[in-house]
Length: 293
Image (cartoon, rainbow, N blue to C red; front, top):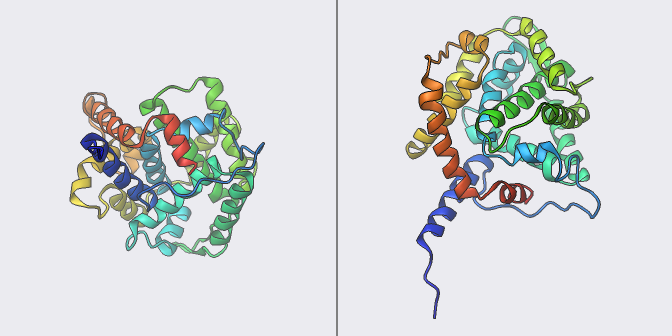
């Protein structure tokens, strides 16, 4: 007798496929990474990086990082001039997600190949800002800015919305682990402790300012051209990402968060949304396995 399809499982499969397609460009997990025996890649199953990057809070951390990155005029000039994010909004997201997943869960060789591919792309990105300041994507200072915003954002999103918490030792370990990727890609003396990371982010503030390109980028990030049915969920992720931004960034980008809105409205709505995402993609262990496939 033919088994009757489980309607709940069908919904879960359908939703999981749509979520994977939105963030990775494919509806099903790809082929498994070929980690040879004894090669756990750059981190390994016991790392803090595996734990953080398997968590659904990465959705929020990723958007928070992109919003924060707009404040660096040189970094934003490169995105505005060389990225096709307006015509193909999913392409940059898919590339970034693929890079994070390969460098996190792939073999050492696969991670190094992904890093080399990004370096080749960076070598083509150079220009001059509207103010006449030259920039190049291979500049270690710009690479450090992008790296720091991502690590800080992923950690803070996990602390606020993840399934677990990171101790002080965990935070230091996560920053040190991620420094391995940063220095392989061209960052000089990447921070290796949470305090060092926060010190860098404090010191770099003198270089940050809002440009017309930044405002355009923020408007796009908060209201991208996505299907109407996805807009409510995306709006929750965007609200959570904005609430996690430093106060100075929200002030400069004109993104105020009224008192009590975050704890009373945004955080509960985010918990419900991430619960649905977790249900569709499976528990953290399964997501880590799926990410490595």
